Image (cartoon, rainbow, N blue to C red; front, side, top):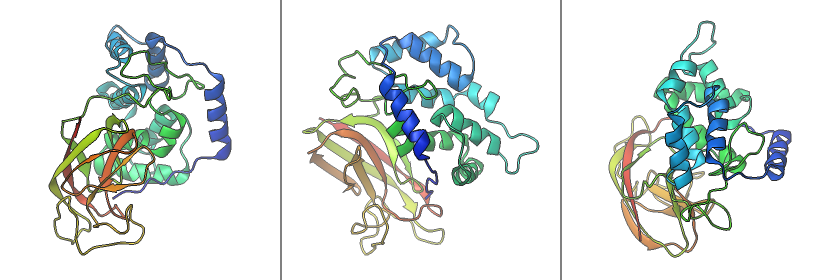
Length: 290
């Protein structure tokens, strides 16, 4: 399992939050897409960008998922995701570029080292997911903030995306019912699904992982005799599947669980452990909401 090692400087956080408060949101999807192209691809949008404009305007896509898609695209990887001569470590410059394009800041030393290693082991798309799923990204941009724009946010004006918070009702990319890969080295994976309080949620997981290089394979039920200090849920089976809604307390899921939620928020699922670097394998998770 990997551990995100990043440091957010107080001054940068204050500037970002102040800018977000001062910058009004915009209902203009074209403007938002153009800003993402400018900051992430470093170019003006072309005719193909109209697909993203339509999906953003119709509520099929959030700004966050559009940033993920653009930063993982073939064009981005060909332009910014290659190793370069003179690097201290392969992909170091590409990871530094993702910090600027996704988080809107220069990398810190520890974060750059950690994510460069992840890029070498699992590829740059894993770094894109990790940065976008990070607490820093969610705190600064959430679903509809535009990185690198000085605080610009999209005013989602579709029924599926509106709420008092601006994001709670948004269901992301509609991943409900589809398999979601949860690597053994992932503490949390963003499912792309927002859940409302009172929803009935069914989560099922198949597949196996190892929580140590020399350990045996285990299912999403985890090791029934295993507990570990510092884990996401220290009193629950180590290696088992867990979930949370937004910043709620974690809930043990295991191989299968159906329940009615008392709280709403973005659904995250992950592996219950305290150290992830030596974990391998993956669970295939499906989510159904009624």
